[in-house]
Image (tube, rainbow, N blue to C red; front, side, top):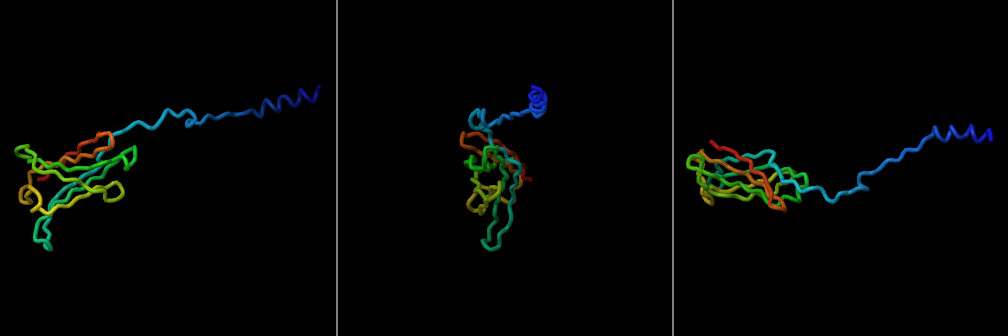
Length: 138
């Protein structure tokens, strides 16, 4: 009996820890979060090869649900003076978290000599949610 009493404190002192894993209590898939535009820019430059001006649009998009959730990124251009819509451009995925698009001026309603445009960049996800990033071009 003496051996049993001396062994009892050893077993009690060694203890036992049980950890629960949060994955065991999975509440389903993560909630849908709209993509955000981290940075965007647009401008125009002269291309001597095509003898035309070229407008380019670039946006860095973040989506906690993964970039596969981003369906489209657009650049909507408005006249900064009148507020009227001028043209819209779809940006293509360019790697990393960047979307990019370039257009010859003759294929757009834009004018490189006119610098009073507002560009609203929009990123849409699978649920149609998105964020607008507004950029003034002067």
